[in-house]
Length: 477
Image: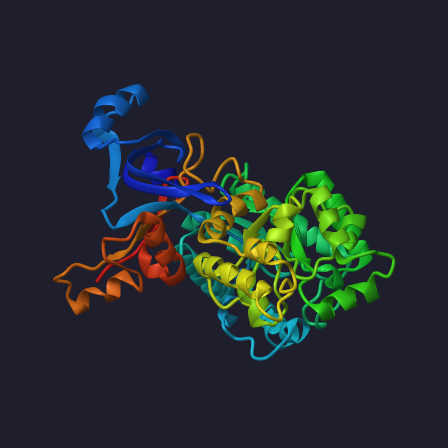
């Protein structure tokens, strides 16, 4: 693994914005952040320029100015924590935007299983996974919870690529021994467990402490796994204490199928609970149609939810009630869910999370009949969706003390965001490089951030760091 930042300490100067809590962003202007050679934030000093940092911070940290890398944000730029994508299928990346008029189960058979099966070819897998990692990094995703395929070597390749390219990742070899097509199934529960162990061992071999890349136990979803496979995966989780990821209550037809396949379980989430998988280290994607009892069970077990608004809309699964889950004490983050979702951007997921929360309270929405005050409360603000994209996501993947904000002791997973400043003499040919966000100078910072959330894209993501290592830099014309 490449050392963070070539072994140099860093001084980063400018405006820093991060979530202090769910509904509050903190703005740190004219601030200095010091990052040591391990990629950890060791000092944050407000009202500090380079000269002051060299005279006050460097002696305290025993740093020599000649050995420090300096990054300075411009007036139209700010540093923001890296995004955490809590649910995406790297193996489905070539299908992004291809879902037709399908619903979940039809979409799996028509588009998903054939694409995933084709990645048994290592050259094809390398091509797809490399592009997926590069694209997500370019959109500011510093941490990703990936589903790969049932194939061991291509899954191991995905882990290798994440490590070499510097993206923090959870890489899951998919387990499925029923429901899928005959050409794309585990041969038996024992084979599914053996293959999962092989990937766990491989990742331990390349990143012994899982500092950057971690294995994650990945039953595709309950209908795709036999009872014996689920039982053995539960035993494997208790043995290894690794995180787990899967799907829950995404689509009405899927829920009916779970009820048919697991008649002794009281709910979809209860299936996972019965096999010992539902716990603090489990990430449940979607959770669109949870019952009160099911949500209460998830909250009691400490499992977390990945909210995937783009996918839920694209394949017409429904609208998840994020505020309701948060109020029950369920940790929630955002997922792009490519390729059910159409975009590799967590920023796109954030804006869609806001819009979907609005749809819940519109005429015909799930919450339209609630009193006006409760309808207003259900809507998610800019501040709240950015929390879900960073601190919320960090909690979902079990890294809330390490990433998701700018605090001493946390690791420097960050992105430098640049907004287009419109000057009186601005030329038309200056517009393209800065993307769709136009700032005229009179907007307060909260309005600038709102413009970024609803208009921004990868053109605004100028640089990206993971553990202090620069892993993406946008090439300007």
